[in-house]
Amino acid sequence: MISVKNVHFSYNKETHAIRGVSFDIPKGQWVSIIGHNGSGKSTLSKLLNGLVRANKGEITIDGEVINDDTINSIRKKVGIVFQNPDNQFIGVTVKHDIAFGLENRCIERTKMMEIIEEYAKKVEMEKFLKAEPSKLSGGQKQRVAIAGVLATNPEIIIFDEATSMLDPEGVNEITSLIESLKGEKTIITITHDLDLAKKSDRVLVLNEGHLVSDDTPSETFKKIDILTESKLDIPFNLKVYNLALNDEKINNKKELMDVLWELSLKK
Image (cartoon, rainbow, N blue to C red):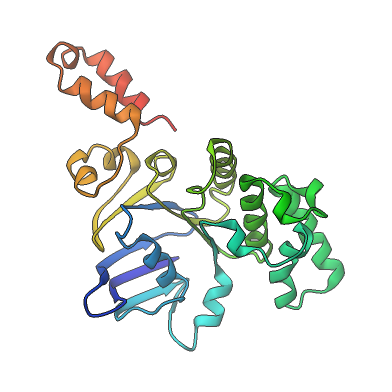
């Protein structure tokens, strides 16, 4: 579904945001891209949607190389949910906001209303269709933003730090919603939250624009040196495991260590 080959990108001569990154993502996989602020995560999401163009290398989406001739068709296949849901609101009500993308695609009104109701229900916002976005909680706003993206039926959805501005309840709401889409869509979560990343099928780690790891969550979280060098905050459960690993009295108890390791990877 997605192929990135030796991609480089810089905003200016001094700032190299992406440095020779390559990876492939098959259809239906959930991939988390993690890294510290400034590691290139969000730049990569913009490259995948053609919002910015690579200085070098090639990006292919569903068999089409991103270029001037294909950009419009590719953007129909890739939806993005941004960090701040307020930046995505267009309509004066939830219903109008979900309708925005459909109106741009000239969907017939009766069909449009069916789609709005379908996806409002999917994100559990069907009772708020007449509500003003300003009166919603952060988690509710983000669910509406996701409904607006889902309504246009993209094959790929990128969640660019979509939980970073939410309270714990909102984070849980959006995480559960992302999990419900697993298998239906190709999902990319751009995040520095390792607790979210460990729920995905695969984790890419960026550091200073370089791809420094590409592995399953369980294997990624064994690479403590890489995570530390990438300035990532290790999840609490994993910290407990690592402390036990360095304690000879506990480390010799295999069954206990196995339980702690399973706990550290609990999704």
